Length: 372
Image 1 (cartoon, rainbow, N blue to C red):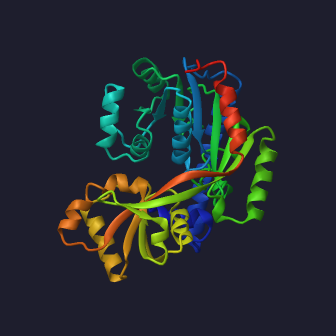
Image 2: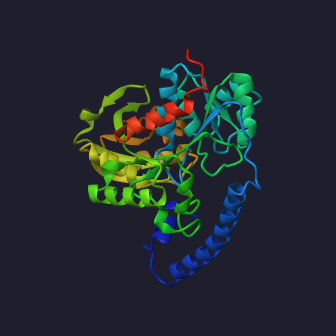
Image 3: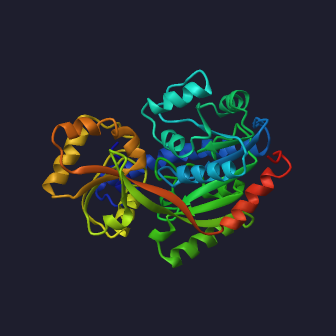
């Protein structure tokens, strides 16, 4: 199903009898999904399903909704924080359509040469960390410890993967769509009920600059009602620069008033477009693909033709999408494309709560990691 159509359907924007019927069917499916999720969580809470302990500290970065909530920037931030403390760490990710490799070193190579995106970004931003791609998180943990000597494991997208025990659960919540229309998959975007946040030790609210202060305050009240003990931090995705195919940086100040054509295949495309508008750019056109879309030369040509027709100054995408189109750009340029392609590089910037979050991380490390 087309992602844009699906979002309009579950949000209630789509009207008519067919939309009502489809939402009824999705609601029926969500009831079955809810039963399975609640039963699984109950079995883990009672200890009838056992979580496997790793011989390393495990931090889990996750969410409760599908789509892009900003997990990857938070993983990178945590990884760099551990690097400053000289703590050897590895990142566990299941990847997307990833091929397994025989060891950690080969896994790094496999990531760069397969159609997966978040792990490739992490490798670029955190070259000191080993990235282990394995859908089996327990096996990935063993691999990271035995072959990389990791003392800390960062489990990317780990909140629902309860088979590997964790020392700290940090959950990202997107301020623009915190509870996924309030319904479980597939009727909404919740991966599990919001009450699951009772398991979280901390929540990082992302994209706080894209909603009002009143909405943020209301969201914090809801989160505190669910789990009064967890730490709540606010953050934004702060644009650093745009980077072109030649790895040339275009400062954000130079993007102001530029005519931008933007495209992406991510979970929350509207948030990306709002970020571009927030830079003072003129967003003259956009193209949305499904999350994890596999780009082809025809896609790049189609994007270029639309941008040219709209007289764009620059074509901009996300870093996640760039990992999949970079190999196609040189050939496109050989065809005489005269509009530059670039991606918007962003970093996680905390507005509030970072000191409390760092203290919680330090407390988790304390006594378990030998000072370097």
